[in-house]
Length: 506
Ligand code: ZN
Image (cartoon, rainbow, N blue to C red; front, side, top):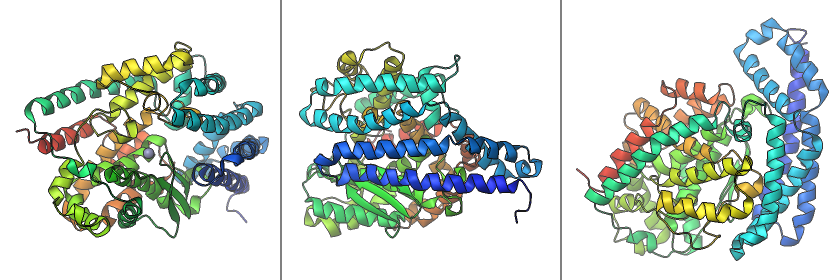
C-alpha cells in the first residue's frame, strides 16, 4: 500500500510514463536504423512506422487521465513538499500542458513529413541541389509555424515558443545579448592571432589513414572516456549523432581518409552525449528525473569532452601513443605537443561541425538569425541560399561555393529541429563553466588526463549534471554545479588563454 492515499495517482502517472517511454524509445531505434542501416527502399514504410508511433505516443502523452493524476498529486501537500516528487510533478505538468496544445493531426503530419524530408534532404545534399529540397522545406516551415502558433501565447514569438522545447527558460532576446558579447571578443581574438601569432603546423591533419585503423583508434578513446560498450554501441552515419539512454545508447560517427582529427573530435563529442545518457539515474527511467534537462546542457557534455579534453595539451600526452599504436609509423614525426597545436588551428570554414572553437559560434549565429526570419515569414525559403551565403561572407569571410557546403549541410531543418541551433552555443558556454568548476574540484586534472585517467572528471560530471535528470532547470543546475549563473566569460577567458598560447602570442 502506498504511504499516502494520493501516492496511488503518483504511481499511476509513473507507470503510464514508463510505457510511453518504451514506445518512444522504440521509435528512436527505428530512427537510428534509418540513418545507419535501412535500405533506401524502406523509406516510405519507415516514415509510416514513425508516424504511427508518434501518433501513439501523442495519444498517450495527452491521455486525459494524466490531468487527473497530476491534479491529485498537486493537491497533496506532503507529496508536493518532497523535493523529488515536486520536481517530477513539475516535469509531468510541463510535458502534459505542452503536448495537449498540439492537435493529433499536426503531430502525425510532422512525424511523417520529418521522416520524408530527411530522405529528400540527403538526396538534395548529395546532388548539391537546393531546388530539390525547397518544396519540402517550405512545407516544413509551414508546419513549424503551425506548431509554434499552437504552443505560444500572443506575447511570445514563434521562435521563442519552439526554443522553449529545447532549452527551458531561454529566449531569443537573451541569446541576442549573449551573441552581442561573444561576437566582438571572438572577432578581436581572431584578429590578434592573425596579427601577433604564428599559425601552428597542421600537416598532421592532411595525413591519410585507412578508416578501419581510425575506427580502432576512436573506439579506444571513447572507451577510455568511460563510455560503456556493454550498454552502447558505435556505428557510422552521414551526420554523427547519439540516441537512446541507460542500457542502450547508440553513437554514430564518420570517417574520411584524410581527416582523422574530425573522426576523433566527432566521436568524442557523441561520446560525451552518450556518457550523459548512460549517467542518468535508471531508477527514474521514463520519468522527468530520468531525462536530460535541456539540449544546451546535453551539448555541454559533448563539447566538454570534444574540446576541453580532446583539444587539451594534457589529453594529447596520453592520446599520442594511442594514435601511434593504431595509425602506425606515420605518426612518428609528430610529438604530443605538435598534435595539441594541430588540433587547435583556427581556420574560418564552410562547415559548422568541422569548425574550430573560435569560429564555431559564428556558424550558429547564421542559423539563429535565418531561422527567426523563416519562422516569422520574413524570409522566403527560395531566398535561403542567397541569405545564407551573404552571412557566411560577412561573419566568416568565406565564399560558399555550392549548397552542399552551404544551407544544405545540416540535417536539423529536415528533421523539424527549429529553435535548436543556439543550444550549440549554450553548450559551449556551459561546457567552459563546468570545466572550470571541475578543475577547481580536481586540481590535478591535467596530470590525470595526461595518463588517460578520465574517471574523476566523468564522475564529477555524473554527480553534478547527469544524475539530476530534470530535477533542476538548466539555470539552477548551472548555479549548483559551478556556483554562478551562466555567463560567456568562462568560455571567452578559456579560449583567449588557450589560443594565445597555441599561437605564441605574448
Ligand atoms: Zn552534439
